[in-house]
Image (cartoon, rainbow, N blue to C red):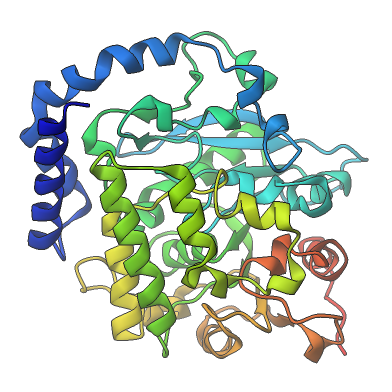
Amino acid sequence: MPGQLRAFWVVMVIGVLAASSHARAGDLGKFLEQATGDRLRQAVAPKNLQRALTPPSASASPTATASGTAQAGEPFVVKTADGWSLVAHRYKPTGPARTGALPVILCHGLTYNAQFWDLDPSCSFAQYLSQLGFDVWAVNLRGSGLSHKWVWNLDNAPATLINSAMRRLNPGSLGATGFATLEPKYANWTMDHHIAYDVPALVKMVRRHTGAAEVAWVGHSMGGIVALGCLARYQNPGIGRLVTVGSQVTMPEGQVAIQFLTEMLTKRQLQLAGQWNSKEVMTQTRTSVNNLFFNARNVDPKIYEALTGWATDVPAIGLMQQYMLLANKGELLDSKGQFNYARAVGNVKVPIFISCGEQDSFAPPIVQRYLYDHVGSTDKTLFIFGKSQGLPINAGHDDSLVGLNSREQTYPVIARWLAGQQPPTR
């Protein structure tokens, strides 16, 4: 990229950030589109068009990554009411189908994508549930994985997520870079967009393909928050059971989140400025506040590497601003500060399993207790993954699901509840 254009872009982004601390999600995209226009697209398009037409090499396949595994799920695409294409990966039952079980949606949290659920056979909740007879759908919210997201150039598109199942799709249905796009209108969004558009679209898609009247939604961190927000604010799109792991609508001690979000904002600025260097970002992340999301003794190094590198996506500025509002106010509000999700969780009536790791620093047990006490569900369970429940280790925010002991410590408890059985109590 010409240095003059890069400098222009950096100045432009810094100006946007300074002027739009509470901007709506569409504002940034519109500004970028107007400010750069044909000049930006002409500067990057020729190279990227060639990149898009080049099949991914064997070295770029998931089997060559640190995880040693591929995204095995069959891909499905759905379009939201506001025009974003979302990709879900379906894991059909590999064992006898579980009679009467709801299809299960697995939704990732902030900075991650659907790969979170299938990083390695040793900690793949998607494969674990499919082996038990569940019909499993690992989904990508907007801006993540193969779903619609803005990239500076298609060299940053998720080629490492493509496997033979992707390439077998009909031409034009899903390209080698998923729905990565150069169009800057896809550069920004808020959590409200996940709540109002992504959740209903994904639930509708799974119901349509399975014929089920309802689905079970399992969300890690923000993946649980968006389901809670949808049920709290809008009509239930068809969620019959809800599992949250490390999700919260309150944050009485927000300093950890503020440090983390500040770091994420810096990374997003670098990405918007075309200064993305994946190796540098990974190195910074490994020594940053992101380490507070793990109990380091409970994570395999290859899993830690994946979750600080190839299995991550940098979230939008609007989304991080909404998280910053949560950290500062202590309660989850919409991006305009007008609707209080935390005070509306009484509208959540579905059976719910609320949980976190006992060593979770981002969504600790105290905020899980608030959620348990305030949801409107009469069928509700609170479970803390740690020694207080007789388990061998106190899990952290992420390693509750992708830790060394998750397959033995976490997965059976959640699977039992999804099957309509109560988890063990000690």
